[in-house]
Image (cartoon, rainbow, N blue to C red; front, side, top):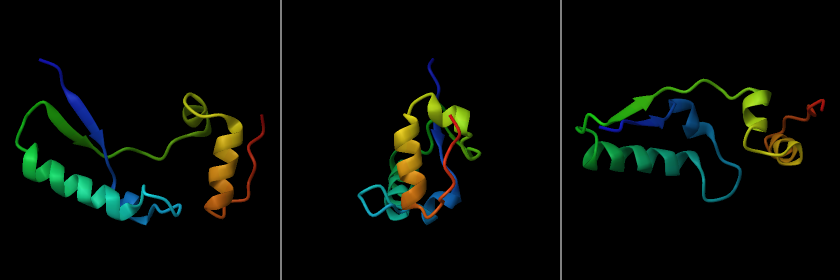
Length: 80
């Protein structure tokens, strides 16, 4: 039987880059999950640690990572 992890942290409530993916969206998803699927053993909520630069680079370009950081007010650029 396959198992599925839902990566979630209460810190996601703070996430808002001004588009549809906001902390409120994460909260609504978790409420829906708990109401509809929360009692199924194939799903597990996992509290994920913050991503590392190396981990982000597995799925995003440096340009995109730098852009997101600037939007968040983190001005540090990544050394390539």
